[in-house]
Length: 90
Image (cartoon, rainbow, N blue to C red; front, side, top):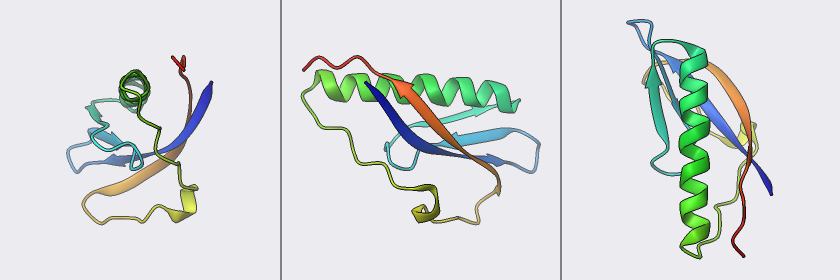
C-alpha cells in the first residue's frame, strides 16, 4: 500500500534543514543537507506508519498541502509530498 503525506522542510538561520510530517505526530528530522533530511524524514515516516499498523491502529488522514498551516518558527523552505510504500499486516 502506498500512502502520501506532506512534509514541511524549513531552513534554520544556521543553514541546517529540519523537516516534519504534520499529520504523523512525532515524525521530525534534522540534517545538514536537504537530501539528508528528506531521506531521514521518509524513513522515520515509514517506520511510524509500520508501527501504527502493527499495533492495529489506523493511519491518520493526510491533509492536502494547502490545508496545513504555515508557522513562523523558521523559514519554510519547501513542502514535499512523500509517497511511502508500507506493507500492511491486515
